[in-house]
Structures are given as structure tokens and as C-alpha cells.
Image 1 (cartoon, rainbow, N blue to C red):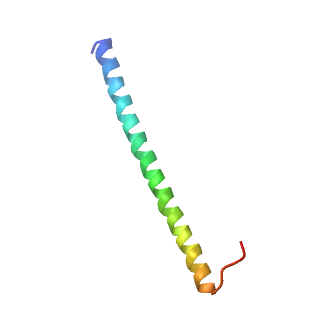
Image 2 (tube, rainbow, N blue to C red):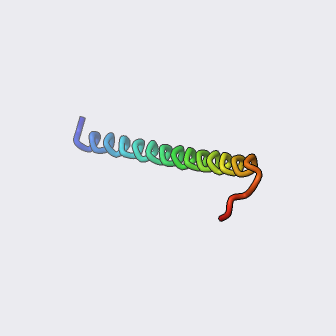
Image 3 (cartoon, one colour):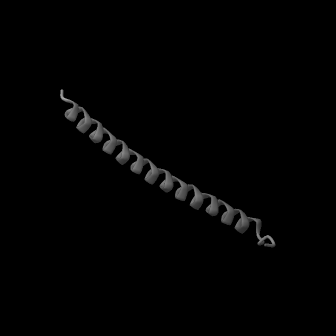
Length: 56
């Protein structure tokens, strides 16, 4: 293998790593949104079942 081929392989590996990082951040933000919605839902149902809205 020549040095150029090795550098090309390294560039390809770096591109793949960047793609994986993008996918990971997308999944993380999706999970954060889902958790946020669940927390809001639990808070709203707690307020609803307690029968009165707490003073804000």
C-alpha cells in the first residue's frame, strides 16, 4: 500500500465516523424530545387527577 492509499482509507474512515456521529446526535435529540413529552404528559395528568390547578 502506498502512502496515498493509506490517506484515502483514513479519509473514508473519518467520513464514516462523522456519519455515525450525526446519527447519534439525531437519536439523542429524538430521545430528549420523547422524554420531554412524557414528562409533560405526566405533569399534566397529575394536575388533572389532583382536581385543581396549582398556583403558578
